[in-house]
Image (cartoon, rainbow, N blue to C red; front, side, top):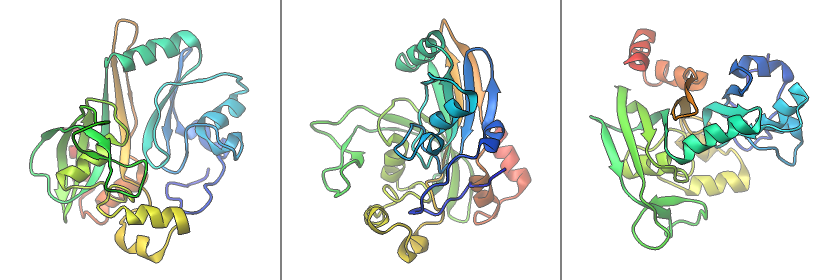
Length: 267
């Protein structure tokens, strides 16, 4: 079994080892495959072949022509990916998503102080002050959309916070942009960490000494932990344990104990 929980940014991500897929598979039935995606792997098939993405690898592994990707995550976000095996299952899950009959819960490692739970109800739109074209920011005006994210600190130490996060809308980069607006950027976030020139440097040159100096982790410390469906056609909960690299950060740089972490994750 391979261990690519950390893949140096700027390097070519490894291809999926078929032996890893059974370990990433959280559950399966006649309708769905539920995977715990590592934080180095893209969801969608890419030009690098089927084994370079989760969906492509699962198709090859199972010999399937069609799979329906219900939930999506950025490459550097780890956690739950829900794949439907057939159209009816995909329709039930996607309808629930569209009608907001799903509660999504993430864990994020944040840099700074978050003393109490807070609902960030701030519109998001294109960041017109940034050279990063895909970046969003809290702003009013053309192109901005209502956005709301709930942040709940569950463990804090050494200038970092482990937060439970629930987005109430589905905007691009919503959690990361709202965390930056709070003054508590996601650990390891090149784009929303407070200095987006790090992202531009990463794109141009890969992992550099400057990135290593300013980023505590090689990826954004964001993990999709739970999908709670409550719809007429689908009432189920899917959950994934905290990613290994985020767990190691809590026990290492944050200086917390296993008992403290366990209590935080069950509160």
